[in-house]
Length: 148
Image 1 (cartoon, one colour):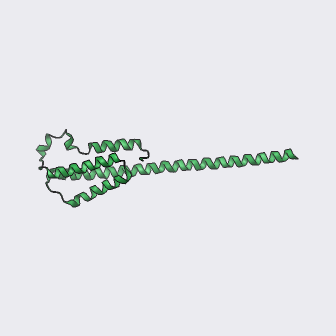
Image 2: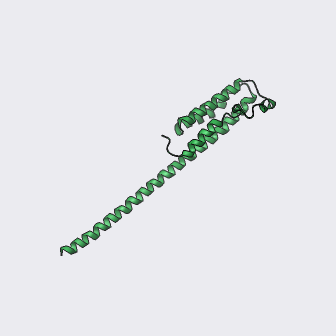
Image 3: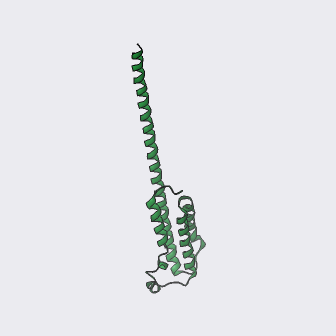
């Protein structure tokens, strides 16, 4: 009789262990999937943020080339985007974004440029203040992992 109990107990223990392993496997795969979705969502948010910053910076930089004075209200969106970067991005991204904003302010203070003036500086970094920012964003998004 003991051998019958032993067989039944072994079958029951095997079922419990098998069920537990299936539960653990399912839980781990769901956790990994949720983490992957979270990282993808975070990456998408950063991509959208960087695109908005590039568009706003380019618009303000083009305006700065032809005007000597800027309205402070024009900078609200730009600095709001930098503030969002402080929450979502690495310090390098924030630093390069701040450099772009400083370049735009300096460009407003410089003499206006005409189209003929721009012809001489097309290949210099002065005409593309977003290059370092774009490269830093590309590097960060290539990594696409947790930032902190």
